[in-house]
Length: 116
Image (cartoon, rainbow, N blue to C red):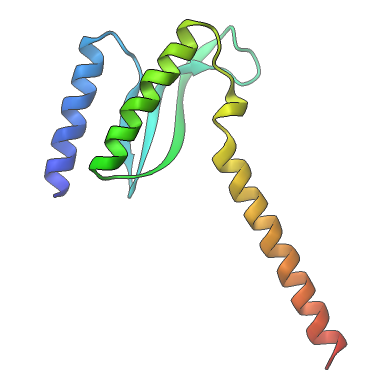
């Protein structure tokens, strides 16, 4: 299974290269990321090699979704429509979950101290 996924990943990246697409799909642990030249967050006129976490599982479905995302990002870059705010949702969502959990823990600690 792992070797099959790696072989599929290699084939996909070779196909992207043949099409002139510079973004690549990479596996990091159990997740799939994109890596390649993307506009800088602070100055969109400059591109540099960056990673974009997709939050996708490293499996066949994740690879298929990553291909669609690469096509979308490539279209956005070509038409100067790429904006990081559209792709930072996962980080913002994790930060919100952490904040919610911290608030819950604070309330729980207060209740335990207050009612004991």
